[in-house]
Length: 351
Image 1 (cartoon, rainbow, N blue to C red):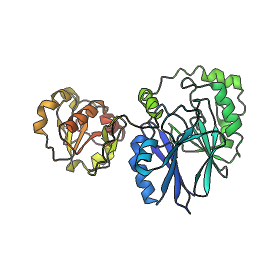
Image 2 (cartoon, rainbow, N blue to C red; image 1 turned 135 degrees about the vertical axis):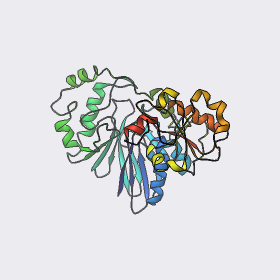
Image 3 (cartoon, rainbow, N blue to C red; image 1 turned 45 degrees about the vertical axis):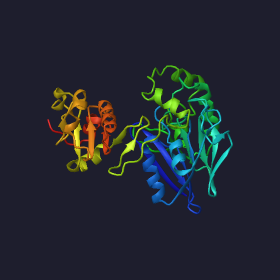
Image 4 (cartoon, helix red, strand yellow; image 1 turned 120 degrees about the horizontal axis):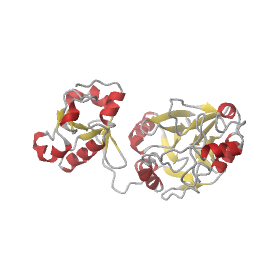
């Protein structure tokens, strides 16, 4: 079997590609909308045919790529029958199987983080994809989307900790760089759900987390209740750079690619004058055109040149990118994460 663990940095989401080597059929667990281009490229390189996408739950921190992958590749969409989502092809109950070639994963209902959480267990019980039900030394929160601490405690104990101790655990997220664990490790060392923890202890802990809601929840949950089907037509893929299009329709590009190709790009900084030389600095060779002046200064910008727009965080430049598109700029992208991500990745900046 072919297996790949994929990562999306903004939401710290893991996606998982499993392929049957004999038939070349594959499934993809928890795909992310912005990474669909990457996933399609990987499928092509590995000569795999995607037969299904499986979401572990209705995510609140990112938009699933399930609908977009179906539109491009014809794969079926599978998720829990308890999810409340429309647009799926397979509504799974506990015990259902999703096959890819001669292999399959078994769906195990593990509600608690949300009412429609599923854990997917490989046929030989060597791998379990636990979504947010069980994280590495942690678990998903239980304070929204029909969450229940008691339900989560029982789900993990009955459906995940009943697997062999050597079964590798692959979660939907990790925020510290860890990639996998095992049933035995989590039973022994998980500070929330280890076998030494009682149900009342766990519920008291979870009921007092006091966490803020995910930043993308207002966008992600409604979108994922449609399996990631956007309200507007998806923009065509760019051929001038590895651009990915966000669910909001904004073409974005990674800082590292921009730094490596800066001499071939027209780079526009849409911050205010006082920000251009502040502590974040600016990208070498960038032209400063504040967002409020951009519409009136469009004739100064070469429409034929590949253009990257940036600001502090990527919010103002997202608006600028759409403005440029509306005015006939075809090769334009927003710098993902803006100067904050540029500097966080250690890329050079002028002051």
